[in-house]
Amino acid sequence: MTEVLTQLFIGGAWVDAADGATMPVDDPATGEILCHVADAGPKDARSAEEAAVQAQAEWARTAPRARSEILRRAYELILERTDELAHLMTSEMGKPLAEARGEVAYAAEFFRWFSEEAVRIDGGCGILPDGRNRMLLSRRPVGPCLLITPWNFPLAMGTRKIGPAIAAGCTMILKPAPQTPLSSLALAGILKEAGLPDGVLNVVTTSRAGEVCEPLLRGGRIRKLSFTGSTAVGRLLLAQCADTVVRTSMELGGNAPFIVFEDADLEAAVDGAMVAKMRNMGEACTAANRFFVHRSVAGDFGRRLAQRMGALVVGPGTRDGVDVGPLIDTAGRAKVAELVADAVERGAQVLVGGRTPEGPGCFYPPTVLTDVSPESRLMDTEIFGPVAAILTFDDEDEVVSRANDTPWGLVGYVFTEGLDRALRVSERLEVGMVGLNTGLVSNPAAPFGGVKQSGLGREGGRVGIDEFLEYQYLAVPVR
Image (cartoon, rainbow, N blue to C red; front, side, top):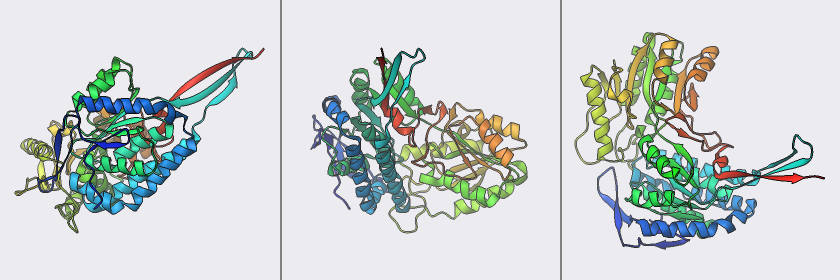
């Protein structure tokens, strides 16, 4: 395995926390401590901010091609170290190695994508309506950014934010989730090796998020926040950004509907359900949360899905043949167990799973529930676990209404063989993304994000870099 980096990365140097504090990183498969990493406090946050601010002007002047080449080199280094990074990720987060390798490839692709976007930042010119003035438009980096990433995709969420920031010419402070700091620190090491100048990226690992982040957002020198996490924390951060009008992009929670119509190809629908539900053990904002299946095919769909879910092998992610690793921690597992228990108390039937196993680790079995009451808590709570809750419906208007009956709107899934219905229902869903006859929507080349309380802005795609750029308009009179 590659060297495990455990210090803060500030101004291009690896340093301990100013007060010497450290925090443990646990293995969710065993509950044992993997290592300790530096636990940043307010003084470290100020040091990281100063490094980012001091590096901003020179970095903004760097040639787009130079920024592009750094990202390209980092992309290649990530791929060269796929196995090392996958083992590191599995150790701290739990996902099976095969899935971790897939995330490494996904994460690297953001760097390749934005290496190509870095040299395509454009502006514009034109004659104003009065005919006497010219308009010149240029785009420039928004400035120092605070990037806050979650634990469920520790490498890819970092590259999805860092990639466009580097391409745009922004400096950064990255605060990864305390459960999974090792992947982010490894990424910082790769970028340093790829030639990223000192101070452009600073990584502060901390268990004291409020003490670290709030002063940065209220201080006036951070000009952009990009956050991926829960809607509740997103609201708090938006309030902190208001004082100094910090530009924000937010990728928040989801409550994804998965709709199976009577004319759907059931085998394809079950395949899609396995991806939409079981990717990352269900610990994804894009995970299918509410399965709405037409009454005429609900029984067949439920049996097929239960058979597939029940065949999955649960165990430590490093073990050969394992399909489903542990959940992130005991609190996450307890939440899933409580949601299942509540649904069962309200009349749900368990087709497979549904029992917390004995022994070490944060494991929970793939579970399929039918006859789920709409009043069950898991209908309006993001499950973040391997639980598929099936409800039935009778007509299109009904299911669209029920699917939209949520404050969230990240993604929805629709399975039907009818083109008219596919387009009609997709357009009626109040979501930022739709998987049509597929359970996978994430792609670096596509804009990722939601509506309503699922967030603001988009990541990835051609628009992803826009979140890190400002327009400047230059008026030029012509006499």
